Image (cartoon, rainbow, N blue to C red):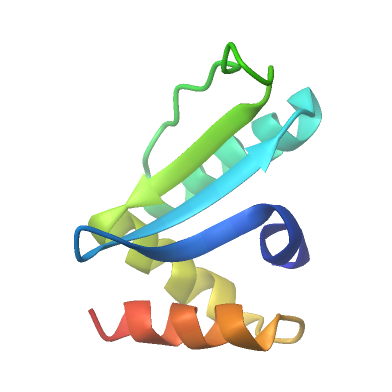
Length: 92
């Protein structure tokens, strides 16, 4: 969760929840995709963007909510404003 607090984002786009994560690291991308597959069953197809050569990974809608529910189970480290946003997504 600490990685997402630093390099991730939670919120809404067009009233739909999302979770986003940006990394340049191949290993972090692979680990994030593996966790997503395990938790929500979605396989992320990831490629580096052309501008920054980073991976922009994310979930939307129900899968974002499921992932946030999983994150909050181990709720020991978080940035308060992001925790508040996560809690609002759980109410979506």
